[in-house]
Image 1 (cartoon, helix red, strand yellow):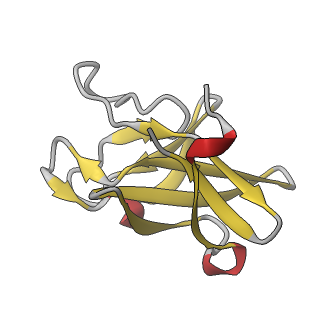
Image 2 (tube, one colour):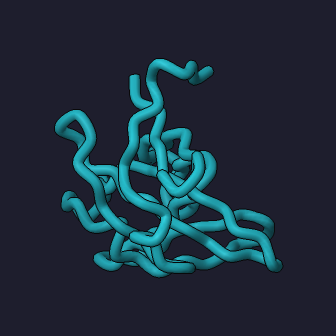
Image 3 (cartoon, rainbow, N blue to C red):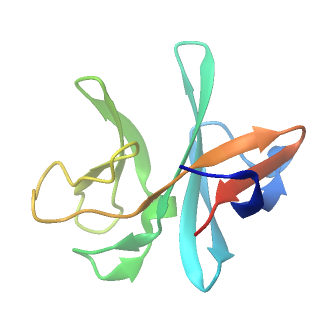
Length: 114
């Protein structure tokens, strides 16, 4: 569970575009951050930017979609789908990406980092 000490400012809320991702370098790790508008509500997600199948930092450039009740990012390389809440690859159970807690405080987007 995150504590107040480990929230780090990542960017301004206006830096994010609905249904799109951006990439941030946090403690030498690339993190893909997404602002997703779903059914009139806005959700924020943060996962590792590293695509373990394509072996490149590209996930922030993926397409956002949904599978059943899961919001996913579809890799721009080989089109694997990663759940934005769990990090699990829906196309290869052996693959997973890191998931980070993200929140908005005022006009700042913050990430919980260990």
